[in-house]
Length: 496
Length: 87
Image (cartoon, rainbow over all chains, first blue to last red; front, side, top):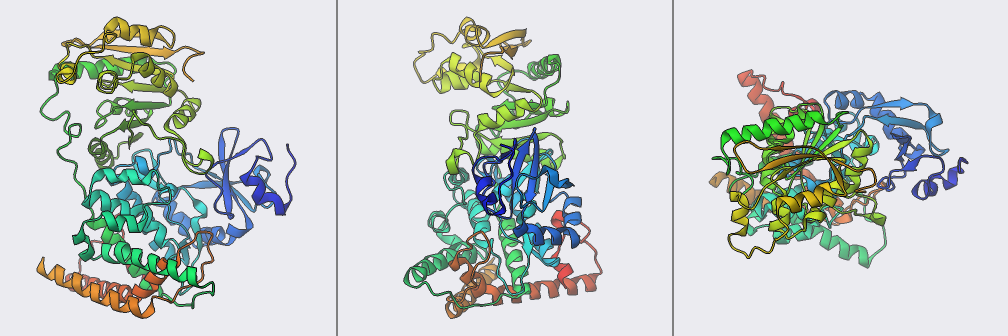
């Protein structure tokens, strides 16, 4: 198991089984220039000969210092070659840790937009120093604590060859411009097209779905409509002939013009959350009075303080705009605020960006259909529950399910034991709110349908949550309401 | 608004004209990522227009800065105009 493969075998070996006690990150196989692997809980990036020139120039040109100084590129330390995974390693990097991975199909509009702008800023800065991004994948961007987008692929840079067009232009348009245009001009929910289309939204599909007036948009015309037409035309050319196409040049000034045009296009696309049920949930008050709301906040904070040792992660399911998520984030806990409504997530994100709030990361997530494992061998993009499990291993976790269970149990017919099992799979601690049938929110859910939920009682709730899956740590009624807050700890054998 | 539309329609004409002339010219790809020959062709096709517009924009920006001696380019990196440094 500890044998190091030959140079010829190394690329194949890294894509197959680990040759040491380390494991290659399953999504890190496309670029032969290097790969990411994990050993003893630490993440490393191996630089292979093919990427050495680009990496060396990244360091020597000063680009690395500028980008990491501005927080646009992930920082790393070079470690001993003894940490290498295969024999061809030239350099081994230990990058800064990203607490919780999110993917572009889980981002709100503002997150995709900021990720796009960061990618273009990096490309422009790279061109000034004789480098260029060789890919522009949205999966190369992650959000650090405080909602700050950062490029995580240090090996994305290659030396810029004078006259060469941008090799990642198609990918940028598919991963960023097309989704943003569709979200802004057609329907915000079309971001979901990113999930089945892991290499971005095909441009012909985007052209088909965008309104006709976008054919006169100064950026969408060339980068979506004409781009799509050129792809179609050249697909036919390629099918007719296998002779290499004639060489043609693209001056650096034109390349900077391309980046500028893309940036203008991205900046012209906007979306303001308005009019959705959840995005304005707290506006004008909820069904309970302000003092009851404050009491719930105080109690939630107290239950959170009861968890010792303090967990490293909090997962606020049904977080809305993240009002309660902030209780965890303010205590230094890496907090993920998950909600199904893109408007609520957008509000949370913008607030987080505006206030530079640390340790809070919002994401769009439908608990009735959480992100699955996707991509090659179903291991390229991790499912939500896999990532929750990883977070728990890295320092413990707590899930919040505040004013949520009735939506799952009554709004979506999920039996209470199944609701409890899902949370038990997500985190070891749970702060959950019981909302009885006499509560106005539940009455609203039952107003237009038959009440078939005989088990939806407090006794039924406690049977489902406190019997086999969890131990009850603390139970507190919320003053001024008929609701109850519970702090539960998952039993050793339960959940996973 | 009207001006914007005129500009947009002119950019359409330029783009189509340049695209028609040079649509077949592409670079062979050396990267691990397939850039797509259509995407290459489009970039090369609109390169002249983009380069000209970019030069014009930079010229106008420099002129405006000289005239008004304003220094509003001290924003943080993400908003920094890196194109300026190219000049």
